[in-house]
Length: 480
Image (cartoon, rainbow, N blue to C red; front, top):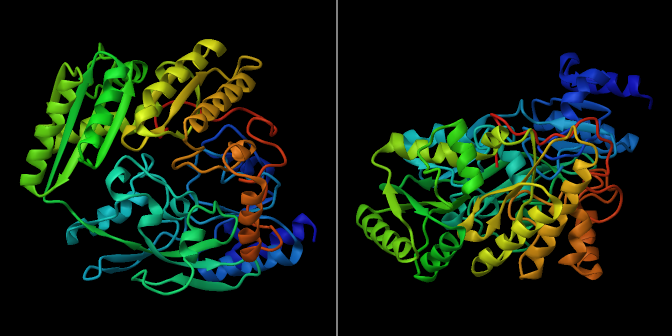
């Protein structure tokens, strides 16, 4: 089937105004939050699971790849059409279909923005725990595909811990439900297999998720340290004491300078590092945990520990953390973010290696990350206009990933493998491991039409795909 006929068939399914196919219009959909590019053949905007099924059936019939897409905020190339094909943008499917307050569940469509679910359920005293820093824009479907995390997942877990059931369109266009509302069904955990499968096994069209009760009390502390070493030691002490805060976030001197220049969030610009620590629960529990955390931080050299005095100050502190990546635009026009995980006790060792990589490649690196669970986010700053910069940046990122794996860590905590890290998968998986994963993938999508050229080694890797202009532009509206 030629492109014109394919477009006509897609328009018949979703409506004439809901298919993008002109090359100029497609440029908006050739990238996500990573540095790679891939131009789709067409982008469709279905309004229902039935329309998704029909689009996938047509693609299967014609042997055309299908690439599910949410808001495009992903940071590993997961939403890029690496081999062309049809991008299925699910942003029209954004309804909250049901909220069961008694059982604390919600059934939603994949295009629902993450934060909108918590906003809608707050009146019932409930919220959805996984909170990527892009939660004002990212979608539940994209979160499911990448098994997204966020600052508060230290205590409450990542997306897979909160998804109970999924409606999925399979490669032949059939629609099926996996899981149930109680996670008590015997048999294999197929929901767990789909969450984090990066769009390679099916297109999610509905998700039943777990809701949690809003805590009675929440307290946010900002601990200020002269040096990064002391902040890392404090993280180890806090967790080692048996406390599990809701979040422990760290920012280094370079990040603090950028945030305060751009946003004025109240971080001390003379600090070597700050920890943003949050605890929640019963009021008495929060009081005691806060006192212990302050004592542990001061014991490791904190020069000050501030407690947010009200909701407005708490929001301002978190706005600085969640807007940190955008703030890096005051330092450089572009960034490349590395998402690696290390044991908490090896944080300092790996951060020192990050500093060595920065010096070796002559590239500034800002660190802002989920310290509580060892999920590093070194942000390599660069200027895409300088020839050869992107290749150096990608090579530097690879060195950081190798350092994470060398201390017993892994390649990704929440951003997925996508295109970015697939060449490094043999660092943590044997050939037998990878083949077992491929067998599972083939069981769901035997023809390999869903989101090809992702996760598994082979084909172009990060930085090797055609570049019109590197994305990863730092500035307002960027997240990590």
